[in-house]
Length: 255
Ligand code: SAM
Image 1 (cartoon, protein in one colour):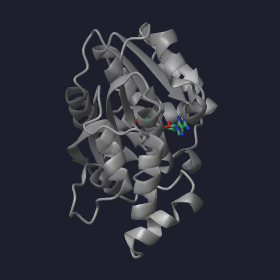
Image 2: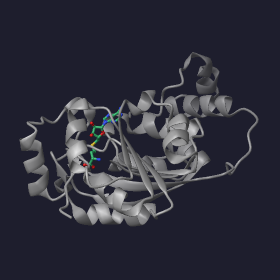
Image 3: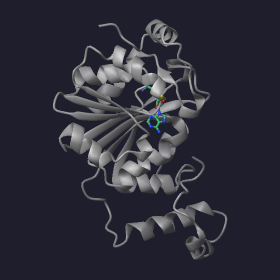
């Protein structure tokens, strides 16, 4: 079967539908078969799996997922891409394409409906403008997910994986590592995408713990304190924590 990720096929499909890339949706489509094979291997997809793909684009990664997984559910916000996906994935009967915003989707409900409630693997080339909110929402809401294998900005991947003492260590590292074991499994240069992003990318796999490695009575309070402490690094810890009440829930640093 022809690979959608082949650069020539991607360009032909885009031209055929008169599709224009939307910067606001973080659209950088993968055009490198080796990278896609690598993501499939690292995500360890097999015929029993239900996979949730966030942002299928024209279906380049979805095609690989359909060939390896039992069932694929793909949520795409851009309705201009839906007719393209219907054509590009027409040969696969194990995929459901949903036109929705993942940040507004009831993910547990979606997994129940399309994956029969079984623990799901999330695999995606994430839109960079909402990488952190998507990942944190999956983790904090305890979505029924066993692993998350995603392409993100390299800088974000490094912050998720960083340990104490590193300059990248911060609230995002602690939150990610409370819920999961992160591992950067590949670095990916800009020429593997159309259009090329301005920054380097990395694939990170988060293996989600059944039980967090430390026990806490109040997760919300713990994260509020962590964010307060790292948000105001230059103040003393006492002052930062004293200000915690004024801080919202949002901050994981710059992204
Ligand atoms: N998976 C495709 C690939 O690798 O070629 C496309 C990846 S592209 C980086 C990100 C995709 O996420 C785009 O198709 C974009 O339209 C979609 N997207 C952006 N924001 C989204 C959201 N809030 N919910 C669902 N999809 C979104």
